[in-house]
Length: 142
Image 1 (tube, rainbow, N blue to C red):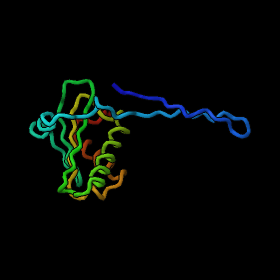
Image 2 (cartoon, helix red, strand yellow):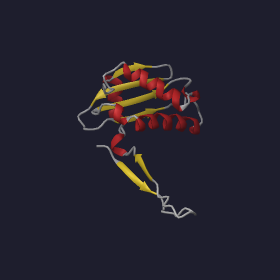
Image 3 (tube, rainbow, N blue to C red):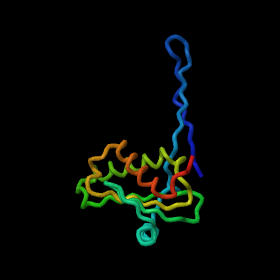
Image 4 (tube, rainbow, N blue to C red):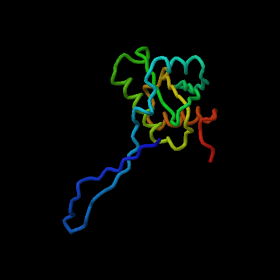
């Protein structure tokens, strides 16, 4: 289930009398799209298909739900600062949020950050994860 929210900014009149109401579309990354339980994440680690890239390990496992769910693991071994670890998580989450239509549903996905992931920009994260997922059946063929 894809949740799309349309947010309207306050309607303001332009000095020349034009209406400047703006509609924006946001794809939320709600709780139904997250793997939350340790048991589910361990199951992906133990039984899932592993795909490696330079800075990420992607684990995929078929689930019986109508949506794909995501978990992101960034250990303190990678960086002791929570700010850096959270930045990596935000970038990976943003990739999945933006590319949800290119990905098949019914999968549990665990992304494990590897050494050097803290230096990756969003574009690098997108490129690496897309390349890794292209090796699997997780991408929708067009």
